[in-house]
Image (tube, rainbow over all chains, first blue to last red; front, side, top):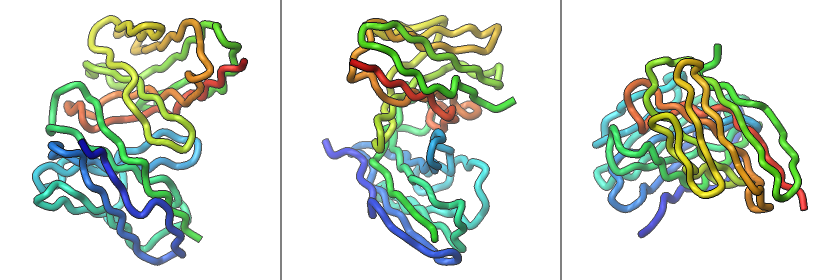
Amino acid sequence: ETGVTQSPTHLIKTRGQQVTLRCSSQSGHNTVSWYQQALGQGPQFIFQYYREEENGRGNFPPRFSGLQFPNYSSELNVNALELDDSALYLCASSPDQRGGTGELFFGEGSRLTVL
Amino acid sequence: RKEVEQDPGPFNVPEGATVAFNCTYSNSASQSFFWYRQDCRKEPKLLMSVYSSGNEDGRFTAQLNRASQYISLLIRDSKLSDSATYLCVVPRGGSARQLTFGSGTQLTVLP
């Protein structure tokens, strides 16, 4: 069973640029969520995708957008990068949209630095 | 009041000690709660789920007090390998798959 994989693992951008982060969900999982984790903080929910539709969004501006593909993989796009966007971006997959044990399976994350 | 608040730590304890972490949450309608563990520079992983008054798994005990909106995690006989950040987690709204994480409590178990 392949776990959640994310790419790239590290990247550096400058203010105003755009970034795309990618995630492959764990085999058999159809729900993907994205979280932002700033240094010293817990992960903050960005949004969730289920069957290629956005299904829930946290307190993040519209310049954070995403996609889910038919194979359940996902992308997170951030436009007009700001210094405060520097963080670890975590992708998590789960086998269904609601209910269950609440266990999310996280990838190792993409560490974004904005200069 | 923050949605989820935790003891900031850090907690530095000797091997074999018992340590307890506290967490409060603001949404009185929450039905399920979780503790995740995050090792340094790694991804969070589920440690325990709490659906009723509490849950026990070996050296780990989670307790829930709904009246006080308070969750705790007790670790007995601490091991060096328990060193990590412990995240208190509450579902957002009605979905157990969209989670609100506390800021975490850092534990270091010393030899």
